[in-house]
Length: 463
Image (cartoon, rainbow, N blue to C red; front, side, top):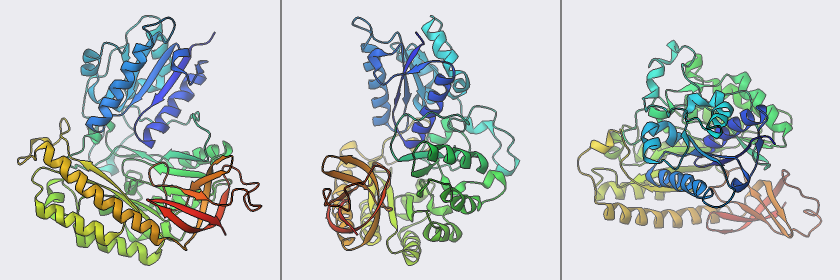
């Protein structure tokens, strides 16, 4: 029998792409991919190392996989890969002996051989934590080919799901120096994928039944700067939308400081490119943003939101905010509330600040008590719930195009153009037994009208 591998993916959509690259490498080596961890010879956990809660989830998942070996059968090896493994490497291997191996990004090209070696009793060395930004010079124009492996940039991919939406990585790494974020240290400096590779992968995904590609990276607005063309995304988006079989192209992870008018124009006018703006505001108080080493304030952000809605009043806007940052005052919280109230965003993720190893913010003065951070998270979350529910209600009467993702019995669900995968709400189509929906299948795009809302979720009827 061939070696059976179970891949468990945690974290963001970027990790999903990385896992599908690993899956392709396992399959190419003749290994068999299985969903059931108990039926696997090796369980490979693609970990997340973003924030404390994600690290805990990753460690708990590794421990749960190791526990499967306590009884008869179960996996013979548990292997940690992904961001947590890359970020902590030897430290993780020392503190978590339940994992048989901790492998870094540079192990990915030989991942099948590494896992087989673990099954044969070897113990490949864990990566030594390093600042991967140093693999490339700071100036993008002078960057040679990357010295280490870049996950998600390989030409091979094996889909682990069968839904009509799939993430498509256009770049990796980040050159920004936000004081609270450790991602650039273990993901490295910003590296764009070649447009031809992105288009080839989009065509392959379309052949696999994908109807919406969700472009992911650490900072999509920087795409092309290391290839000598800062407006390369504006040229790429219409080409992706023209791929036979692709109905929608969605862009994620946009930096407000880099969102140029030419990109807004393409994202609100190019056929097949959905007007969806995933903007990383993080806060709205100027003083807090400066301590975060970020751009902007309430007025500048509102101008940006207005410029988008002037081009398309129905455009979807989402963001994340951090509350409880060191030195944040009551006035800063009030300013964030003012921005959120005026901006009327469709979805807002609210996170409480927590120190991250190796970041500048961890050494800042005036840290807030954990209880105070929790209270502010709850306060902003209540406001966000009210505002986003009202924003959804305001869409009643709007025409929408719904990409169908679920058809079960009398239930038909999907997402409108302003709703991103998994986290932005969904649309439930009424009249599933009506002739207009009798033959609807997953992957269809159904024109509809919004007739109701529940939180950020919408109720729609076929047009």
